[in-house]
Image 1: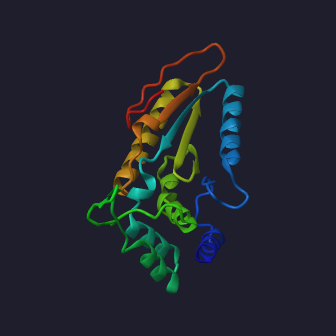
Image 2: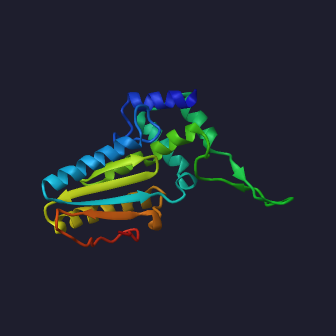
Image 3: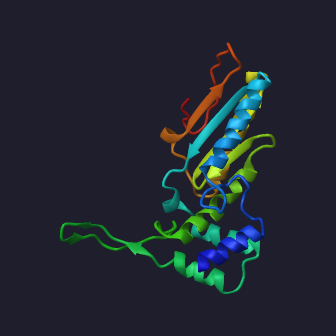
Length: 210
């Protein structure tokens, strides 16, 4: 019930980024794929280079800043009992490890959202929501929960590289300031060139592989 009301509040207020397709009504991974396919078709039709970078957050749910979620919801105008309930939902949790019959000491979980709860998915979407607005103008993007893809097309490879490097720098600064970290092994870059062309990509951030 709480999650239903929170989702209604976010959707009614149009607070969630339109590029976020994860666990939203009438949206799916297909939306993200169609957008990227359309961008690729347009780039080929215009004989442009299309540079794409696919990011994956490392331990996304475990490292989410709880205070950041509550602060963002406050900025959205969520008032009353809901913020208090959400604060109680996120705080006061601890965990321990059991090996056989031996238990470790209990450790307080100061950050993160509980995995396995439908409410956690919505709260995480709030936490990651603003990353899209950190991107430079002209950089397209799509998100599915903690997966982010950004792309840019240009007639000259040097232009595409510069714009994508700027996008990577912006994303890197945003994650650093919001407690997130991208997984370098799972972050991949691709280059689609006009027919008969082949270009190497030269960008540096997050140990990106291509």
